[in-house]
Length: 408
Image 1 (cartoon, rainbow, N blue to C red):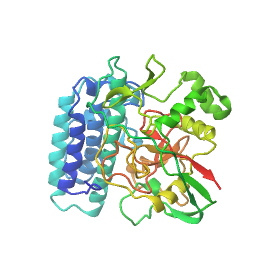
Image 2: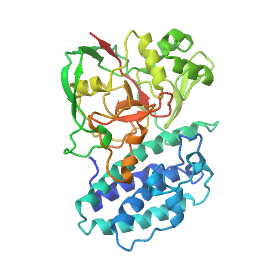
Image 3: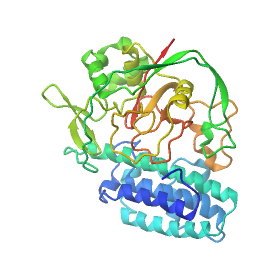
């Protein structure tokens, strides 16, 4: 499955994938919210449906009436221009509508969307549908991120889907040197689909640098921990050290001491010992930056990452996996989102998409850091060279890891 297409078949393929991801979950699983950043599964399923109802059907289908006017309030996320909405931190309080009601809501909207798409809609409709399909793919990844947090809150640590990938030998890190110079990054405004925050393509100057040929592994992280990495303030940014002291954290999210001097990890496939060869995952920007200092290196800027990836790797269409694995391709895509040293800011010449959908990315360009690549839970066909993911620096629940860089 490649990038989604705004056709009837393309629309249904993405929609069905969301339902397939939700299928292993009970109605009770789909209702829980364990922190403000986590949304219930049924809310994700309803919100992406609201997107098509709000921005496609109500805008472009004459005479269309909402399935239920209350859904327009309950399932709006942050689009101020679309009207009032239910508070984000209280989504888990919504026992009604239930998971079955959301299924019926999705079916009604799907019927209307397929009918609309069968009528050869104009380019502006196709463009909005394409945006909505990529948006739904983002929420497919969020669905897995969030249900992992929900299941980890259960003292019995239930699995989303039992799975245990094979262990691999850990290999030493190597380095690739790049000359830098004047390079172009970003997506052209007239090219294939990209989010507005990836545009416009522009030139940046890079000094010579070297970049690691693999991701930082769980074994690397165990060495960092054994050397007191979580107890050495000289390694940490001031805000990171303050957050660390407030949280009492001593390991990545979902790691637990096993009582015998080792560590176990809760994964979507179940709870098991930490596998040293796997990429470390669920670390914050603060943790990634501290590790880089400990390792005598740094995080790459997003321009360095994109320039290196353009030379060394290509996005691969691979199926969703429940946990990152050691790979022979350097792990540029399909393992963990990789923290960069770059704040999430607008590119020179950036302009938000017109209309209410322009609230999608630009208004979050404050207090966040960019991650590049893609993760094991990223839907097939959703990764690309110019993709700019972003999270606050303290966030851990994303499938986030890192690769190192050095100045030459």
